[in-house]
Image 1 (cartoon, rainbow, N blue to C red):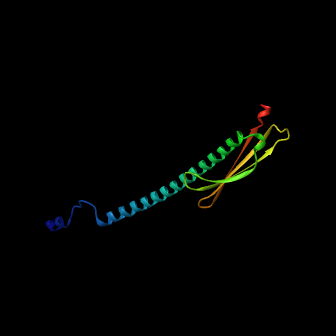
Image 2: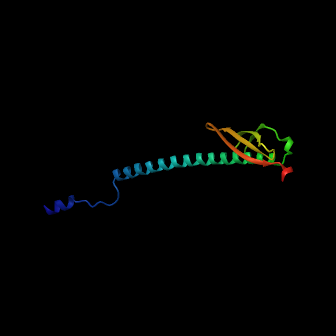
Image 3: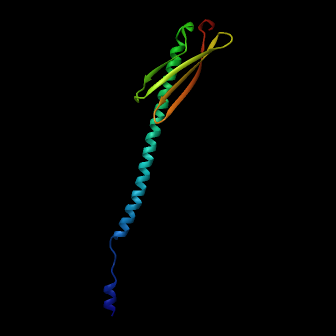
Length: 131
């Protein structure tokens, strides 16, 4: 009888099919979560690049207006493509202060990529005759 019971005891070496299937399911869930994270990270990086490019375009316009002759500064708008091949619309207005010594320049950049986006920057330009 002892011999019969000893022969029924099987020593397990390795993994069963169920254990392998469970580990594959767990690994798959983890990889799906990682893929979702990578997708959202890529989209956020893209949005950050677009915002940085829009701020750069606004700053360039402010600097351009800063070296323009005071009397020649006028409101306007233009369109330009950035390095991301997105078309940005840049518009600018200004407002003189009561003394005529400086003006506030407002530059707004708008673009459309997965929905409308916009940033606005305000800066002061001083009249060079008062410096």
